[in-house]
Amino acid sequence: MNGVEMFNSEQVLAQPEATIPPSVDGSTGGSAWEIITSGGVPGLVILLVLVLLSLVAVYLVIDQVISLRRRDFIPEGLASEVAAALRESRWSDAESALQRRPSVLAGVVSIALANREFGWSEMEKSVENALVEQSAQLHRRIDYLSMIANLSPMVGLLGTVSGMIFAFRQVAASRGAAGAGDLAEGIYQALVTTVGGLIVAIPALAAAGILRARVDELLSEVTRNAEAALLPLRRRTSPGNPAAGNPSRMMPVAPARMQGTKMNPAGGGTSPPPAVPTDPQGDPPRTRSRKSS
Image (cartoon, rainbow, N blue to C red; front, side, top):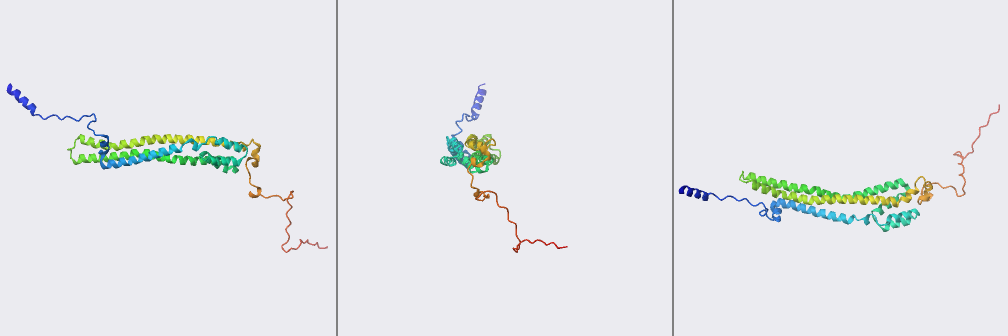
């Protein structure tokens, strides 16, 4: 019995030590900088591109926040001042008020007043066209921000796919010698770029939505204020207003000689009848004599 016990004890002592798996509490995972740089040169290049995209996105957001201020779109009291001037037909005062306070509203109303001689329908069309142009200009930079939000995940995914290709290539080159741990390490290194792309895309997408809603809100207010400023002209051109049939009471009209119309003679009355054309030879018209029977 003693010999058997000694054999068992020697066998137990001769067994190799059990491999203790690394702790899963993250203590052996390395620092954040080590994780970022674990993707090698391709991963660093992808992350550098994402950093540049994030800087451009930050610039666009700050630029839009500064540009989309209400006083730059609708100065306080401008619509009422212009409406009061138009109500009393003080055209120069209305134009000077628009020039003193340049803004989106001032530009829209100025375009409408420039087309007042063509009637209210043309003024409405000019206001609509001006607002469409302003909307296109304001949404252009927001579209750039949306493009960055859509492009960043694709760039991160490119880095992830490239990293996984390298990881599986190493496993294939080892001909099965690499274990699951080596494969998992390559995969998590590749996923770093995907995380970076999402970090850039999510705030950019949220900022683009907020800025787009802000632009729509400001343009709606510009439309309402432009209608309020031009309301006196609309009332004058309405069919129920006596001034609607007399353009001279609605707006300054150019003199008749500037419009290509013909003026009556200074003495008044009707125009003289047209002269009877004479023979080119200057001879008076002849009457045919009747032969005597």
